[in-house]
Image 1 (cartoon, rainbow over the protein chains, first blue to last red):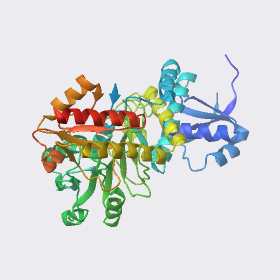
Image 2: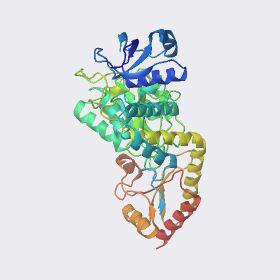
Image 3: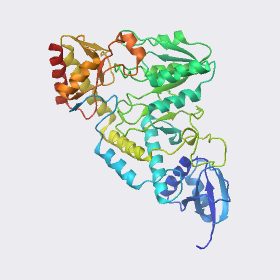
Image 4: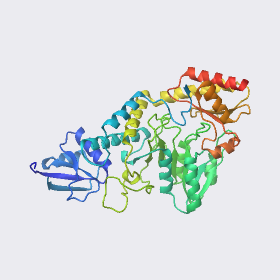
Length: 76
Length: 378
């Protein structure tokens, strides 16, 4: 088992939104990556953005205009 | 072989398109079905293509670019997803069956009412007819950008302005012009732009789509798997997934993406000027040949298409001679444009269509002129 860590998990309505978030975060150096949506979350899009807790402000700034479906603090 | 059937599909594509499709077939998983590296590569390829197409056609949002297998599917999606019983729709005699048949079916099965702006013997319409046909219950105008038979253009900017002024939806079929003419759906006030990827855009067959304007809500034509909302009994209502059911053609879209890059790097203005020069040279060359009847209006800007008949030859016979004796590929017959043929008076014999593209040469045009002359003189 890999060690678990508390992280933010952002879910999306559409795969296009997930792609747009990944692109912006990569361009602006915001840490995080796309992961399969943890099954304990009922999410629309099958992919979610996982990021460290301390990067949330950077994430919000980088993804303005894209409405996430949900934001969860999860031990993953 | 001289290929002059580019309005059916462009045979030669940029080398980068072939390479992109092959690479995609070797490396891409299924977009939005999983989050492993190969699935993500596919999702990124599809998204990048959405962004490029949005920028190319002036669509405000990449998520409002929906991919389909061709323009016909895009048009069916738009027309069946927008109209309800009692709606009135204005369209034109220039339309292809990909517009006509969905509209006829909507009329027959759902009571959508239709009116047609008539075309004259040169294949032109009078824009004033849109005003004449306007009714209180008019919901939309649907037109092609260019006739696939004659190459005549419609003034889609003027129709877009008319639609905007009267609060109508405007659905444009850009099958014959996408990739050959600059298009900006926001500036030109289109509600929906339908395109195919394998003609002027020089991408693979099996690619196409629709770009949807802000606030335009289209009900899904097909429903099914999207990779999102798996437990919902209803199809997701957010674009683009709302109008994309089933596995996308990521392999083809990788090629379309490379094709758009090629057009942007080459310059759509240069492409249009070159294709127009080919078309003008061919038109000038065959106009002086006795026994050749040319259809359409050549007085202004137009798509690179020349439709003609030779003496009293049936169009299919002329095309067969061109193929068998001269190795020149053209299309004969009705071209899926029945109302246009009626307007031109070519319903019984069809027409031989020469359609030119970026990869044709002036030498090929001259050879085609010689071939037409040779057939006409026999």
